Image 1 (cartoon, rainbow over the protein chains, first blue to last red):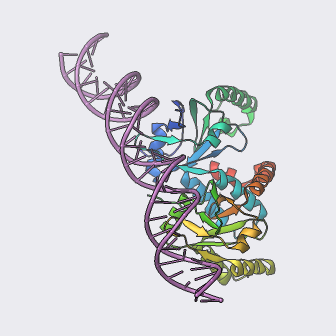
Image 2: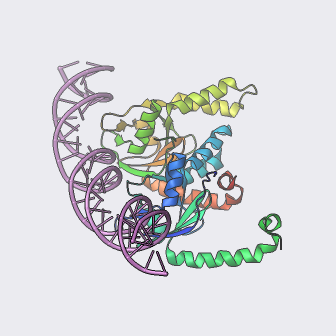
Image 3: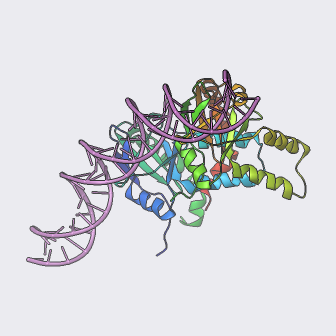
Length: 157
Length: 157
DNA sequence: ATATTGCCTATGGTATATCATGGTAATTTA
DNA sequence: TAAATTACCATGATATACCATAGGCAATAT
């Protein structure tokens, strides 16, 4: 049985007064397997926290390095934004990370958080906001259904 | 069990009358792990100090040597500027470096400094200037979002 | 089918270690 | 020898690591 490294599912966990949240057990297993750590940052486009395994950022840094573009303006801006906002979060022996106020307030999270799998990444939402967002996404996808690759490849009809 | 060496996050530290600043603990850990030292120089394009682990400059130097098609005149000039300006900064037992007046005045830093992670590099800003710069960057990057490598990286595979 | 056992996860609480920072001594340099 | 630079010590605040408990799920036994 082959192992995969995809963040999946939707998990609701409590956030305590110190900002501590249990990282879902499945997520922890992935991180442990990869031998890296979790990195979180404010989503650029949504009121939510985004996270991924550190090696994804490592890949990004490597790409930038290899591009022989030590002085590019765009890359300069991009790296500032991503790496300036990102932060490593290691979990304690019970599997919890402590989210910073910056992240929590960006996502309007107070006492409850929703982890939403996104494959290589995942997101952390305020439950109410996620409920709205999920509806929006479902509607959006249905509208575009006829042109989605997914339908052509996997699910005829 | 650290596998990656990325400067991240945004950290505010105080600068005392002698120009001493604590290098953020995470940054120190990276330098220690790499077995090199910090190198700082005046940013060529922004009113800030730029820093990296010494081995990144090593790599830059190697690239110049090895490239057959030589770098452009401009890039050659730029690297000259960097190496001419760069200086090693070792931190004391409590983790502080002493920034020179040249660097401090270039970044308009007096009593407070902001460390901004950039992956392989990091920057040190005057807090007010960084606030302005961050806003500018966010707007800029959002405009270009669709063509950024970052998105491709995340979804690949 | 029901009950029992045991493991794992989520969560509350607390002790401990680490960090940033002020101060001072030792060393260098001019 | 004076000034400047560097290395070391001390402290409070903060974040981190650890301990303990409760609830849920699964496997096994009744």
